[in-house]
Image 1 (tube, rainbow, N blue to C red):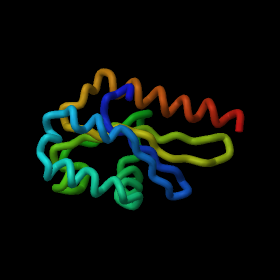
Image 2: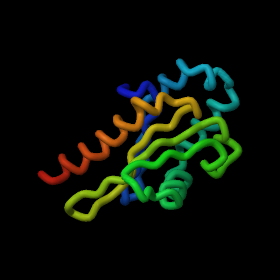
Image 3: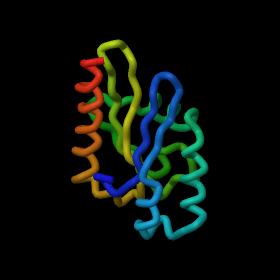
Image 4: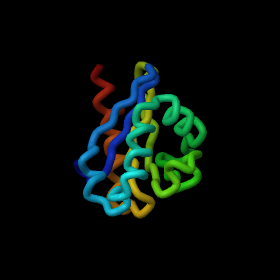
Length: 126
């Protein structure tokens, strides 16, 4: 809701979570039914996102993958902003935002960074 985009999270247990599908319908890029269908089809694939996240583990605290770097012509008009999180009990995963290449990076990056840090902070009490 905060980014008005599609949120994606993975866990080291092999789970993939996503939310914000309706936000896609407000972005002109996703008026293209073909693109929307391609994005929705990969949202069923933990393996796709896990391989992507492993390939682009950030050297910094955040990573941005644009267009063809997503490794698929299917998503060449999209971008993905994500962070890796780790918990004190050695669990880890990623959280990010998938949207058009013209994402509002000035608001998406700090939001993704904040939620990654929030997961780590909350996990300290588990």
